[in-house]
Amino acid sequence: MAEEKKGFFKEFKEFISKGNIVDMAVGVIIGGAFGKIVTSLVNDIVMPPIGLAIGGVNFSELKAVIKAAELDAAGEVVKEAVTINYGNFIQLILEFLIIALCVFLVLKAIMKAKSLAEKMKKKEEEEPAPEPEPEPEPEPSEEVLLLREIRDALKDKKE
Picture 1 (cartoon, rainbow, N blue to C red):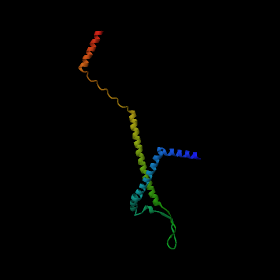
Picture 2: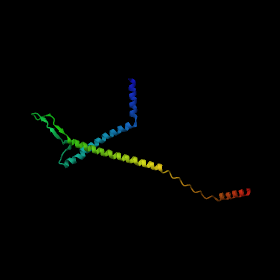
Picture 3: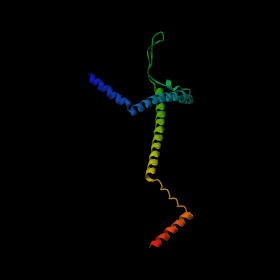
Picture 4: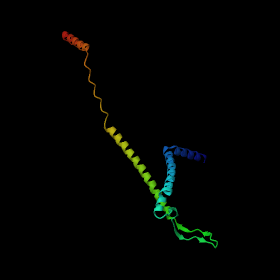
């Protein structure tokens, strides 16, 4: 049993120490915060003007009553009403569409960046670096010319 625990913890440690897990955790945390921002955007900024435009309706309060609440003689609620809260559903659909659009745009940008990087890498592989042109040799000085003449004359004398 003790060896099973050691094996389990060793395996768990290896699992956690992988980079993908850390990346995923960061993504989940940022995604959660982003979800809250989108919720606020929809509830506090987008829906109020839409509700005002259609007659001052608060979307979070839109519902269809299936069964009305039961009240006692004093007017207190004995049983809550059974409702379909379609206003909340509309808000959640709008939140989903905004998040989906943002994810789509981010993924599209990432794919475009990867494609561009691959094109640049492929272009570098296809085009070898241009070979530098050899520099022209400078004109020999008068001393070099004179020494060459002497050398040639000595060769002619030996032959």
